[in-house]
Amino acid sequence: MEPEDKVDSKTPGEQPEVTRRNFLSLLGGGSLGGAVLAFLLGLVRSMRPDVLYEPPTRFKAGKPEDYPEGFPTLITEEKVFIDRDEKGLYAMSAICTHLGCRVLWVESENGFHCPCHGATFNREGINGEGPAPSPLPRLEMGLDRDGKIVVDKGSEVDKEFRLTV
Ligand code: FES
Image (cartoon, rainbow, N blue to C red; front, side):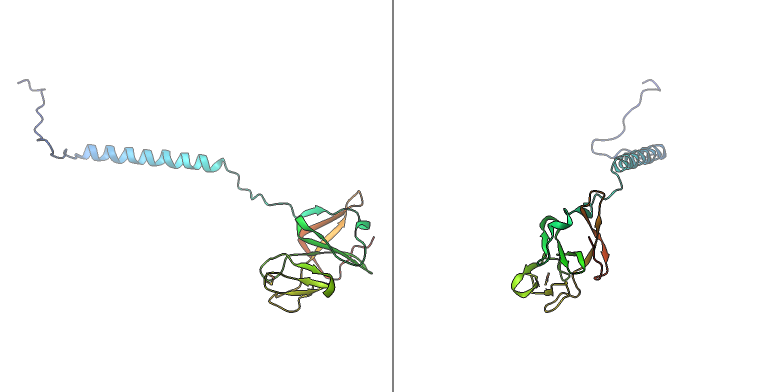
């Protein structure tokens, strides 16, 4: 037998011997694999923008003359009432301050009613009976360059605020 010939002295089923060299190779390979995986995850994460896409809070609501005195007008898709009194126009959220249901205008009661748990609000949005803890929020409104009403659902104003046109 030649001296370079190796004789496999292991018997079938016997575990291969773990040498220090093998162990360090495995450790190095594992570290490299972990680093590559972390890099790839970071790359994928960096492709997603860190921006929250929320619907805009401002919307246009037509001309002031579209809102006669006498009853509030619901802008259904925005869940906002626009009303007019002797002092001017105002916008009010139609979202109940209890748990967020949309309130309904009740002509016969000259006020609003929440169908979910029975809260009531008067014509000015002040809470009355039921579990609603606070009035319906008044919302900022103004006119754009074309004379159209712009309401900002993200900005509350004092209940005395009126748009005078
Ligand atoms: Fe309006 Fe509960 S959500 S009373």
